[in-house]
Image (tube, rainbow, N blue to C red):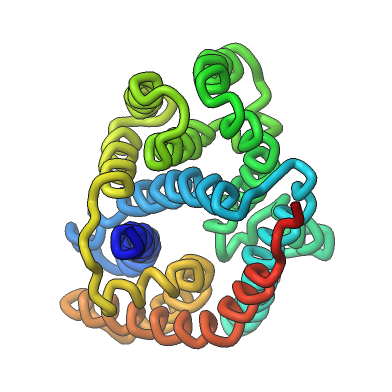
Length: 326
C-alpha cells in the first residue's frame, strides 16, 4: 500500500513538472518568435500554456482535498488551513514578485522606458488583485487563493455529504456560469470546472460517496469544459485526471526534479527566461533559435533550483509544521 501511494505521489509530481514546463515553453517560445522569427515549432508551443494552467488547476482540485482528508481537517481549522496555504504560496510569490519588479525596473532603465507599475499597483499585487505587466502568469495565483477560500468550506460538504453535494453542485455551476455575472467579480467561477474535476477525482480515489454518481459527475464536468472553455480544455482535463487516477508507475529522479521545482519554474520563467531572451536575441540570427531557447531554459531551471532550495523549500517546511488540531 505504501508503495502504491508513493507511485501515486510520483505521478502528481510528474504532472506538475510537465505543466510547469508547458507554460514555460509557451512563453519563452513566444518571446523568441516575437519580432525575431516565425519558427513554426516554437510558435506551436503557444497552446501548451493553456494546457499547463488547466493541469495545475485540476491537480490543485485533487491534491488539496486529499491533504485535508489525510490531515483530518475540520471546519474549526479553516483559519489554520488558510494560514498554511498562505505560507506555502505567498512567501515564494512575494520573493518572485520582488524579483520581477526589480528586473523590470532595470530593464526599463536600459531601454530608457518608463516604469509603469505604480505604488497602488504594487499594493494590489501583494494581495493578488493585479498581475505585474512583466509577469502576467501571476493572475492564476489569484484564482488559486480564491480556490483555497472555497475548498476550506466546500470540503466539509463533499466529505460529509458527497452524494447530495455532487448532485447540487453541477447544476448550480451551470446556472452561475451562464445566468449570472458573478464570474466578472469572482474569477474562480470561470475556472471552477477544472478544480471540480480534481475534487471529484479525489472522491473516486478515496472511494467516498456513490461510485457511479462520481464517475457520471466526472464525465459531465469533463464534457462541459468544451462549453465553458474549448476542445483543448477537454483534452487537458481528460488526460490529466486519467493520469492522476490510473497511472501508477515509478518516476525517475530526473522527472521528480522538475516536479519539485515546478512552482519555482512557474514563478520565475518570465522574469528570468523572457528577459534573457529579450536582452540577447538581437545577437542571435533566426537559425540559432533553438540554441537561444535551450540557453534560456537552462537559465530558468538553474535559477528555479536555487529559488526552490532557499525560498520555496523553507516556506514549504513552515507550512507543513502547522498541524490541524482536533
